Length: 406
Image 1 (spheres, rainbow, N blue to C red):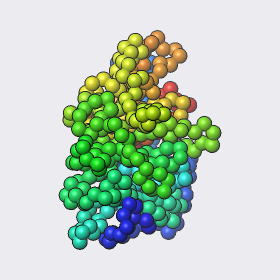
Image 2 (image 1 turned 30 degrees about the horizontal axis):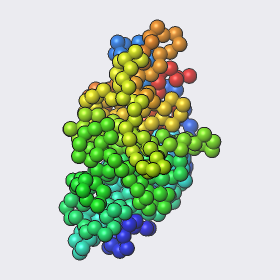
Image 3 (image 1 turned 90 degrees about the vertical axis):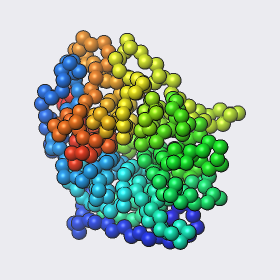
Image 4 (image 1 turned 120 degrees about the horizontal axis):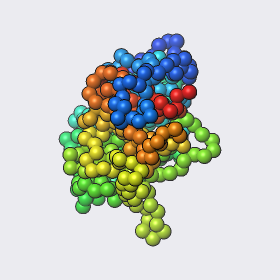
């Protein structure tokens, strides 16, 4: 196992991998995928023509505080909860449990390398410290799990190579979100207490870039870690890119743009679309997305960039298919929000509808019903299906747009 970013640190952690002896890849088919609840629980005033998301039976229950969900390029479903990383097939059957300390987030690249954000106990300056870490795993779908790399804060930050360890401040840092690109670059959101704009070291509130081998190759410069704006990064909680499963040979989205969520109270806009700009003279910078700040009320009534639209956004995901829908889960409102690629809230009206604006399909509210959530913390999208990690209810719920039901 490689400990990324430093020459020697005593490793004081062993990771037991819990799996059945008869571990199989699991079926990718779900015989119950078309069993759909009646949609009567959705307020008809918010869903004209009966358009909205409906849950797929069965609801997957029995998790312990699930905080993230991701469907990989291997088509396995990955759920992070108190037990670590759960590996499920498409029927919801748990095929493997991998104990990752403090696991909070999971993603996968096109090589089928799985990344899990968590914590690691290591000795620094003869003192035991618990630091933010990202584990890169192989074999998660087949049972022969191996850790091939470990990215550890602050040693895997190129700007900190010559800096001293900051003790409790470095221990307070967290890796909060991950997403990959077509070339297997890993984007990571990080949050922490040190955000000095005059320092040579990068701010703790940042988006870091790692290449396929785990080397820190840069960060998103220009995002403000201390002040609210259209390109700030205040206590980031998640990141999403435009590349995602299923695997494609042709038509791969090579965009390096991304969307981040912020949880700081002072952030007026808590879900931000950031564009990578490359200028032959000025170089590479990261700027606000001008398209999404155009609030065209002739097209929609609600928008992703409506001020104070969110309270505590925990996760964001961009559908990689033709819809390019943007999904956000907010634990402050116990809700799932859905937006178009332009940031309009809602979906296109069906052909028979008299509506001319986007139809609101977002839903939620605290509770345990099929359209209620408690502290939703993770969201992803795979083959027209939305997966939500419903933390407070200990379950993962799948939803499909009613107009997509065949």
